[in-house]
Amino acid sequence: MQSGCIFAPRYDNQGNKVDNQKCPFCRTPAPTTVGECNERTMKRVEMNDPIAMCNLGCYHRDGRGGFPQDYNKAFELWQQAGELGHSEAFVCLGYAYDHGRGIEVDETKARYYYELAAMRGGCGGRCNLGVMEANGGNFDRAVKHCMIAVRGGYNKSLEMIQYMYSKGHATKDDYTKALQLYQSYLLEIKSDQRDKAAAAREDTFRYY
Image (tube, rainbow, N blue to C red; front, side, top):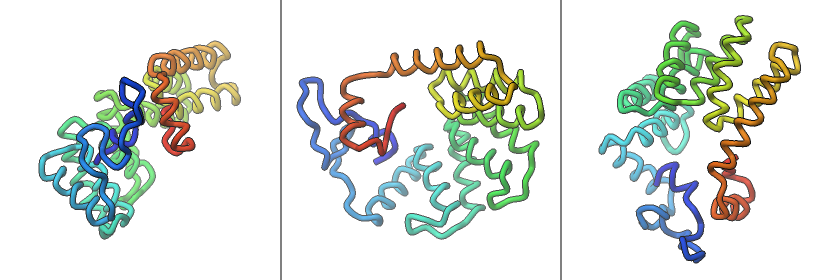
């Protein structure tokens, strides 16, 4: 069971509630133990599932889920996932270099991996590029990066533009445009099923 299962609708097209004991996509019964969940993750990794690889890398980075903390293993898994097109893995690599998570801070490498993520459509990488530009005083470039991420529905970029506006580094028009883009994104993805699923989970996994 991977990330997509979490956001799957709780109701089918006829309005019938989906059996929450099974994956809404593959109909496999949900794992009941951490060990079973890890076993499934490892199987997905063996089948070159980049999402599973990225997730396993995060487990090793944090030393959770029953896995030992191993930054080298985390980096290896993220690189493999990135080669398979998973942009979030490059965000993880960039963040590690950006903030010194298991490795010395290296802004050049952080930017490199954020750019790889952004080129693959990763809004997180695009937003982080905006943050780096803002930290360097390049606010026009920061707004441009964040605006692209907002268009993709990344609400942290909207918050970044709001912050820059509050500090006088972005214009009112910039902030208004960002709000409009984000609202357009929400309207595109909005559905009764998603609203019901979000309500059922008490906002644990909100899609907006």
